[in-house]
Image 1: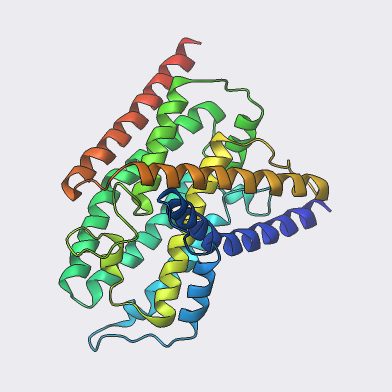
Image 2: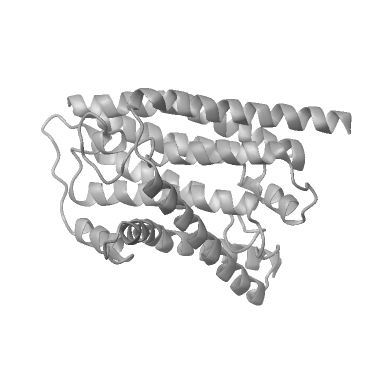
Length: 319
């Protein structure tokens, strides 16, 4: 029954997150619109857009190769595989032994490479510009993510996300300055990875400031729907990752527990709603920074992660 429960929890988790990802994007857009005094589109609008795009055949450039045809599917597959490893309403799912932060970072890198290759494939100026910026930012974002994972590994003794979430939920680590530094670093990386303000503005198509949008300007129809779905899945993944590590309350423990799963589902929805509100408030309160300031922004995130790891290492050695 334990193995069956783990498989069932895994299937429900994947279905939940895949269905919720476009709604998360819609909720953030709706909250930002309300904060600006506008009515805003329905939170379900991203699902309607995806359904409309999926019915359309993609139009490809004459010199497009198999990369432009296959990269959207690779990006969505990598995003689904990564998000299947991040717990939502319960721990101990079937893929929990594989839920390693380093593996999740690798899957995110696969999606990043896929979209960068798509931007370079056709040979347009904007695609190359966006791909160059994306990979340049990743060179600083990935070390910051690894340093934050190192902070968690020092406390939990492993980089397994399931074990880290269980350790933090038991409150055995206490309040630490190093965890605050790791949280700030992780949030900065999440903003950069999802092309959100202040690194990029997902609501604009200004040529000289685009990063993510520049790489998919040539996408249309079904391929554009897949890119939008991958973007929504990555955003939901980062919010779920922050919730699993830093706000682990309410998550059901391992084992088949339907009532615990329902309570965990309610807690996960509340946590995701609060994080969506926080992100919408943050983006509404600040402006997009210049592209040349983004390396400084990510460099600070990397230094904060390094400082948190050093503080944890020294404190655990002295203890």
